Amino acid sequence: MNIYKYELKTYLKENIIWTISLLACLFLFLSTFNSFAAEAETLERMFENFPDVFKKAFGLGSINLSEFNSFYSMIFLYIKLISAIFAMKLGLDVISKEVREKAVEFLITKPVKRVKVVTYKLIAVFTHIIFMNLIFLLVSLISTRIFGKGDINYRVFLLITLSMFFIQMFFFSLGIFIGSWLKKIKSVIAIAMGTVFGLYILQLLNNTLQDAKLAYISPFGYFDTDTIILSEAYSSKFVIINFTLIIVFFILTYVKYQKKDFPSI
Image 1 (cartoon, rainbow, N blue to C red):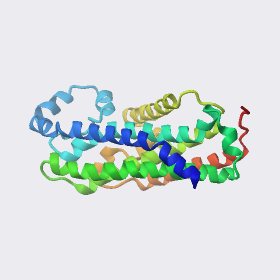
Image 2: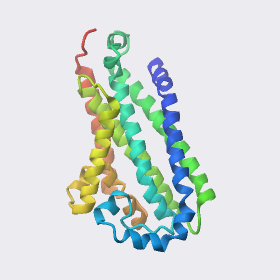
Image 3: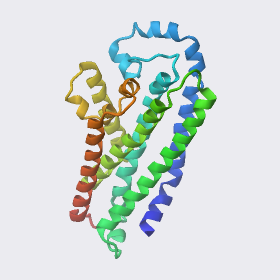
Image 4: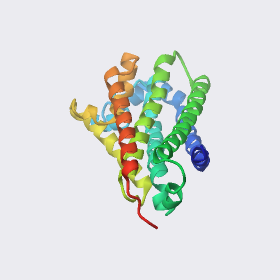
């Protein structure tokens, strides 16, 4: 339990900063909604001249700027990227920092089994992700009252917003998995950003090439906002794949951490 409290306290300030950054982005983008809605027809005609690759990259594929849900889905792309980087960074950092900080001997010589060490670390990061998502959900709902205009489909709005949690859990589990297998990590943020943007680019390729195989690789494709708006639901197939991968990454993390040889100081 002391490990849980320590990890919770360690990342509290960082979580607050990232959460505030997400909310700042949300309010900054939503504050422009009425302006975009007023010029929707003009802007949409302008976007029609852009290449399909460009429109898909910036979430402009099938957007209707006069509708709040459609506009929200466009700006949510940036929310997903920022939150995914944060989750993967935490996963990488929480499992590997003792090696980087040369404090691993202090940790593993304590009368605590390695399984419990991983569990406490996992729960601590999970707590931070829950905290971020609850705050973001509450503030985003309030923002619909401040910036919303016209009819808002709250089912679609909530599905889009909650997809952040599922994407974060994927990248958190992937981060803790990679962190447990690598011997030493020099830059956590570099790996987190590289992985997140790499998987996002794969999703862009999937949208551009319409290759069904690529849709299974990137978690951004599992919770595609255009699909959510059209169907008003998640794809059960991709939800199952997402949670299966999360479980597999966690299991492999436990297996590796149990057998891992830590470098002596």
